[in-house]
Length: 270
Ligand code: CIR
Image (cartoon, rainbow, N blue to C red; front, side, top):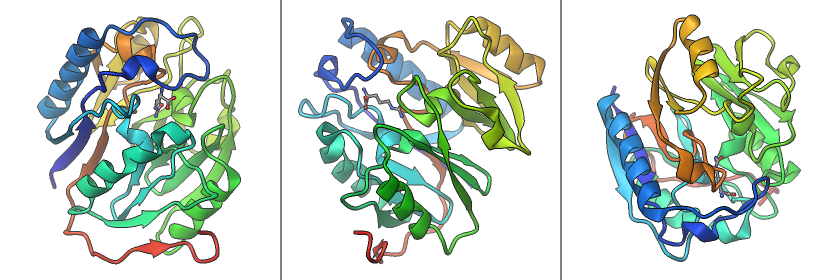
């Protein structure tokens, strides 16, 4: 099996990004581009074949491809992002995914951001957020009901997406910011807690046996390393000002068999 990573270049208008929890700060576009390249280099060195989509000046947040699809081994679900400004991002990601997976779709009135969907083996946790509503969650559950996933919704607070608070760093291990999401939702999984001095340290990207993780969260990185994880750090300061983390910048998946062409929509929910 070989891994694909879909990434998208930083929009030259990233400074007009959506912001929910952070105050607007100047984003250095050139630095953001350089940091995103370094991130892409890490993905390649970890065995991913990159599929790079061009940025779009009309889509300030287009670099955050994670929100636009949920890619599973069997199918990919194209989301209907919660921010209206982000809905046009779907067409390029849809076209990029078409060769690899059968595509399913979240439809109006559903809203769902991929950043709210945490997949851990056959368990899928969906965060209820300002971006992901009840119809979006119901549609995702319906679309996946013929596949072997146990899907449940999770409450969290104080951050944009569920995966700002909790991410998978191993087959059955999560990195978790306990102040923003209760560990009770994740019984049966191993947990590594974010260091209390680093509240924004909950977003990590697992690529094979390596955890890609932002620089600047040394205490939490040390906690992961003490538990036996291999951590590779990447600079993320510029896109962090747009509320982006390391999971947001890519869709990483196994290449898998050629996709079937049929589309399915959740009946009665579209
Ligand atoms: C937004 O608000 O949509 C972007 N500025 C940040 C999206 C980050 N994506 C993610 O956490 N999955």
